[in-house]
Image 1 (tube, helix red, strand yellow):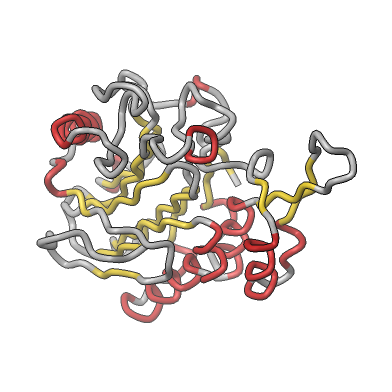
Image 2: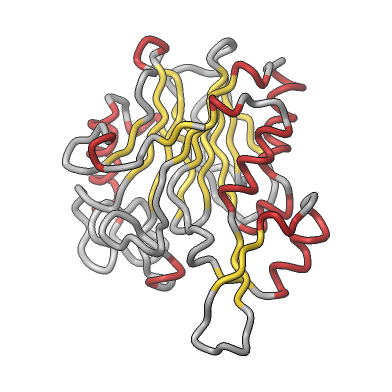
Length: 272
């Protein structure tokens, strides 16, 4: 697996607004993740926030979408988001919907439609079938991991579009790392019941109380394993390094900043 953000020197960026997977230009494709900088939203949403749900203004978010679209060379009005509910519903779109679909993953085979999910610790997973020119965006927190949403998206790509997993490129975006994602039995019990060999994704961590065990979940490792188990070549899986909770300079984090944290966006699609 090759990481695309091991240091700032690997970034393809403008005003620090985006992380891009390089090498997709001949395919007229994009896979991009926003950083928190380079936008116009005031604190606590500073600055490149993509959600009004936490209290930012619609005008600020509109301007942020325009700025991000300009960076990617796409029309922000052609970006399809979804109303995420931490489930396993997958929306297949063929044109711009009248309203964001209620789903945690979106799939399209339509060029010039750009699929997006919003996150502030949960893991965004972007997928491109470079042969059939199908794209998918997945929002995966711990509930998504329990629902096995990434495997379900891959199953839909195979069954509905005929995708060969060997033709897929996948990128795991910025998310909270196992260093910070402390979880309790409310998470671990359903996780252990649903995910094969769950203990390999649970890390032990230190706490201020020597007598208390701290267990942390590795969302990136869960999804990487799901992709490989479904036939995606390991060399085609990329990852944006860094923990959203640790790195306040680059990332928003619900765990660190609370409900009024800003939201990132992850965008994928084919331009033509």
